[in-house]
Length: 426
Image 1 (cartoon, one colour):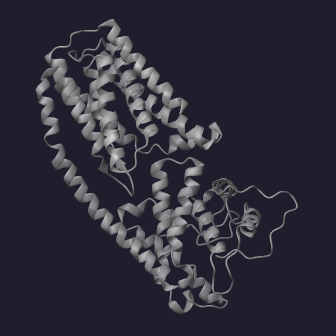
Image 2 (cartoon, helix red, strand yellow; image 1 turned 120 degrees about the vertical axis):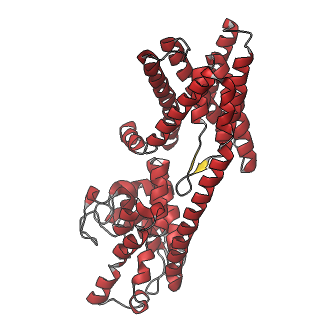
């Protein structure tokens, strides 16, 4: 909350300073045209995000926000971003659930980013795009970096404060998780082009608005096809779970547990999306396992167990055909690997195992231990806590197990606490 207040105060101070200085006041028709059109583009970009991957959408207001930073006086750019983002965020909040803190933070984040970019551009290029020398191009690049840095710094600070993780651990994970940088580059480039168009012919900015509904609809239709395919694969995984009454809802629960672990570890949204989607269908390969083996109530023979161990590879081959699942295929293939290298199918150990697979393994183990099976009743939380701590560093990644303990509100067992001799389900 303190960060939100600080951001809002700084943004308001920037506007106040600009107004008191009277920079280029009163503003003329060109500035008003720029401000009105950019306000509309910013609000539209925030209200109508473009669907991307599973449960992810790309907000495109970065482009008009950056254009505002290049075209308008810093105080006017901040004011436009305030009106556009706060209005759009409020409307979005009314659609779902209204969070005042979220509206305040997102608005302040946009304003501070715009102010930073506008200030850098004003200092280095004199607030003019009517030049074509290298200095202007360098200034535009520095302005984009300033806006991106402010935005990322605010997000990182909030996540770091909420999760309470070590700075040295979270920073590399945050940087690695910024796989959407290509999108950022494209949006900043589009903002620069829009600013060039606006500087030469202000009313031509309207041409940027006209194709947006068609583009949005086309991309939404394409995403709908992906979602239908994704839902079909998820339905297939649920069918596998439904074959055995003792595993009903297993994949869904593992996905929920995996998401909690990812959030606790402070992973980036796109990484969380990959892990959760892979967890949701991690056992889909069991569609290729014979019922006589999959549903056998007694002990499996060596031949039958070898057949069961085929399901991660089957699932990986099946999901690799679909773009939405492609990045998570390695998590599906390796979710039965063990930290000490005794797992299957590849015998990977420690950090040779993909992080997503290690997360799914912890979630899978917890659900297997606490669920009732044909050969035993589900274990209670206390027994599960002790047993998961015991196998951490053997079967499971100890760091991921500790993240799950924190998410569960569990304490790590003290020396001398012993788990009952219950075998962890495969």
